[in-house]
Length: 52
Image (cartoon, rainbow, N blue to C red; front, top):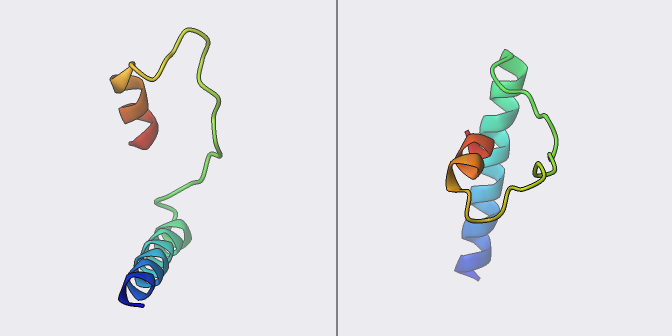
């Protein structure tokens, strides 16, 4: 029970922060981008750029 409450609280918190940033114009959702050809899961810097 506490696990689900924590997951729900975390999800709502992240959603609220992203919503506030989007309303302030500081965050823009670009959608999911496919990996360029030749990029595999071992290309750590590529994935860090996608997260950033």
